[in-house]
Image 1 (cartoon, rainbow, N blue to C red):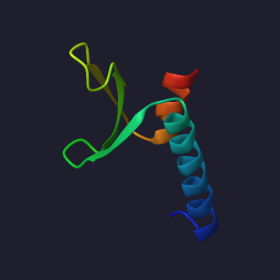
Image 2 (image 1 turned 45 degrees about the vertical axis):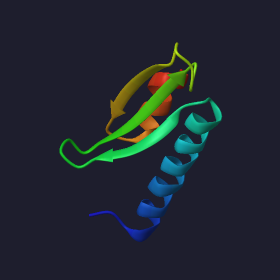
Image 3 (image 1 turned 60 degrees about the vertical axis):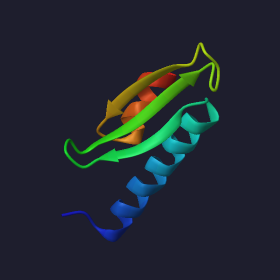
Length: 70
């Protein structure tokens, strides 16, 4: 069981990772209740005929930031 301080630290790290992803141009699509995964999207050429969407799923935003941002 996590203490309140551990929960706060985890949430702070998750929020920081989510902000880094958004700053890098990823769109955070949310959470998939079927899989428990967080969904991030990369959209290029938005609102054009060449629009491309790529979706990624990760257990946490921290994992997403580590994989997508290096």
